[in-house]
Image (cartoon, rainbow, N blue to C red; front, side, top):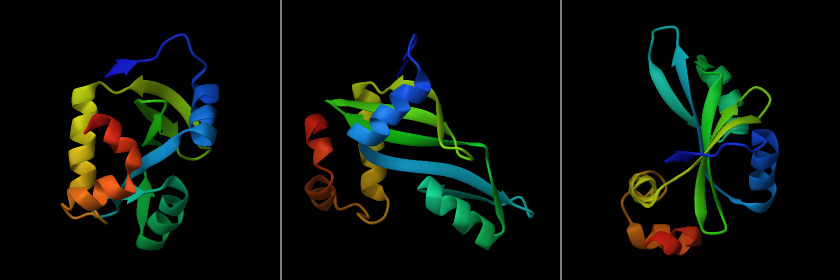
Length: 124
């Protein structure tokens, strides 16, 4: 993974949101018992975490695909501000794809994953 330097992270992130394909947004939450849970989609995570008694970490991760590249953005969840942008290397993308295939809604069904997530064909 390589960190993109000499860019305006906020503008780059806004461009990804508008012109890219969201792959996944995650943020970790912890409850008063010290249990941790991953929440998906920042907007939903804010509501779900509060309902379930979890406090979210300040920063989450957003993965985006744009023009044959996959980016990992560190996002300040409270105001949806992109703070750090990394471009994933092919091995990182392969690991991300394998992780996504194992998760809901695909539950290991790679055919269903590639049918729905057409961006991933570039890396198959």
